[in-house]
Amino acid sequence: MSKLQSGIAGGRHWRLPALLLALTLAGAAPAGAAVTSVKPSQALVTLLRAHEARSGPGVRTAAIGVVPATTPITGERTTLPVLARRGHWLKVMLPGRPNGHEGWILKGATRSSVTPWHIVVDTSQRHVTLYLAGKRVRILEAVVGKPSTPTPTGEFFIEESVALRATDVGAPFALALSARSNVLQEFDGGPGQIALHGLDNVGGTPGTAVSHGCVRLSDQAMRWLVARVGPGVPVTITR
Image (tube, rainbow, N blue to C red; front, side, top):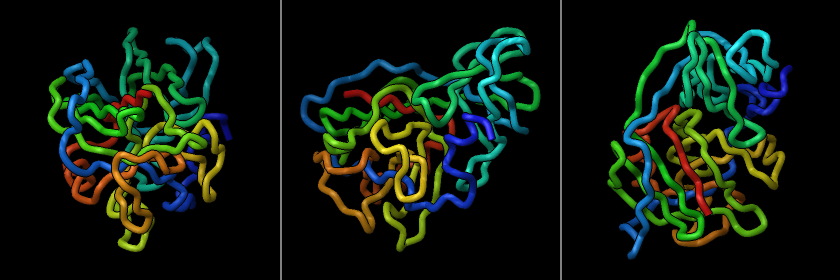
């Protein structure tokens, strides 16, 4: 198993509760919320087969690991943000540890698309901002990581959208991110993966920092989100 593969949730047998439960969208925009500049769109690529990621745009560069064609929880197609193009090669963001790592894959056996959505999580203000085509459309309060297990900062993306059972922690939905906890290498049998998810069976008061690193969202906000965003959508987390 490659380093890249071993950093991804442990396959389909990984339990849903292993998502670190944390962001909570709920309510109106906080007063004086800052406006962050984001790109109006993000190029994406969906894998139609597993791809080997390399350190540069060429077969003679170092191999980083194999990116699976499907995601570990839902089995949907892996979708990655595209950062650059060079000939038949694409520079993409990769999931798992280390946070924010990148690699080059061949363009063959992929499908291109574009998303106008961008999510920005401000951990100091404890709110989440949704952007559409570069314009702010919604801001909601959030529960973020407590000081001992802070929500990691950086540039990430949504790996997959997970419909949870009513009895699951974080129901009704979770948006599993490419981010991993910088403190917890393992959490409840999983890889310390960060997610945006609901409040069911976990609770939390919006505007507080009490989670293990994830972002807990109100049920209403999560339903609104999953109807609009999906795999590949960029997520910026700031402090």
